[in-house]
Amino acid sequence: MYNNNFETVFASGLTLNVSERRLADRKLQLLTQRIVTLQDEERTRVSRELHDGISQLLVSIKFQFELASHELARGSPKALATLDAGVERLAAAIGEVRRISHDLHPSLLDTLGLPSAIGQLVAEFEQRSGLNVRYNNALDDDLLDDSVAVALFRVLQEALTNIERHATASLVQIGLTGSVSDALVRLHVRDDGVGFNPRRLDSIKGGGIGLRNIRERVEHFGGRFSLASSADGTQLDVTLPVRASPQATL
Image (cartoon, rainbow, N blue to C red; front, side):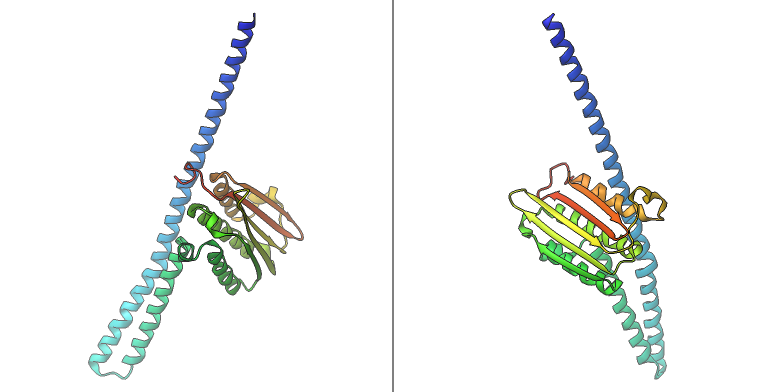
């Protein structure tokens, strides 16, 4: 009798473990598919920017320099002005290349670390959006794996993009903290905008994509994601382990 009960419990436990493992494998498969999709979307975006931005600028510069060459050959007094215009457009092309490169992987992440890279991102965001941003850093950057630093930077990029497009805010507060004892890093982002109903994200045109990307990045690293929004503003909190698991770095 005892053996039969033991075998029944053992079989039930084994079935449960197999079901949990299948569920975990399915979630991992879906997450992997989503990461591949995000990579494809990023490649498409970069390709479009190269074609519509850099490519057209370079063609324009080519025509400008060819025109300047013809004008110089004819001794035209307009040649210098044409050449100056071409140089100006070349400077714009260089700026575009730097912007695209920075979006793909901010160089400051490698040279000065996450806090400084966020500081630069905040300064650029303030200049572009006209919003007031308060940034408080209380993180020892040596704590973080490179992949975790990149993930946090991307999360903040997504959050600031959402704020700029949808929040109608005037003030944004950003906090970055880390604990050696807890081996965790926390990113806090709050704005004083109009807020929204998180349950109705799908009805906001494009509004749910950024938050979905944030959530999936956080889940990929086994972190925590929380979002609260009201008429007084929106608050986003992300907590990640300072060391990425081997699975998360794949």
